[in-house]
Length: 239
Image (cartoon, rainbow, N blue to C red):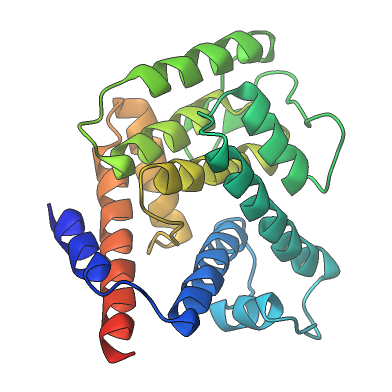
């Protein structure tokens, strides 16, 4: 309900200035790229990500991290194309996302064998069943009733993909976050950097998988979305 009210307050300020539109577009990319880097163990600060998004090359920052931020920009283009075609998330689209994040690899880096995720205290599904489980999970996630709650759907998709862990490291977790962001946008929201430490993020993901209850993860997304909505509304009111 809070998110609906906040969206209405922001919508009431439309049409937005060109400056606000550009700020939001830049903020969306920074949020997604920074979340992915931070939760993947990078020491790059949010300010550093913002500077790279704005075109700077930063000394002391690995080239691969500069490149990953560029790949997130391409990922947003893929989001826009898929949204324009009203595409639901399926294995083909997920493979497209991970192919981009893996720097345009022709074939997705599929995992082999069983993997123990010690940081989440879970065992992934056997590699021989990845294809079947991934297809069935994405179909079920699309059919489920979330009561219009885009954050809940995003949480379900994210945690379900981590449970299956279909790709080589680090692409399973990166693709899960890419899918999460896509579902947030599909639900009329936008990309977000969950305001969680890496350990808290792992704990909420682990709890959602082991307890089969993603509600706490979804709530963390709602809090971050609401903070972002309020920030954009204040800027719209000031412009």
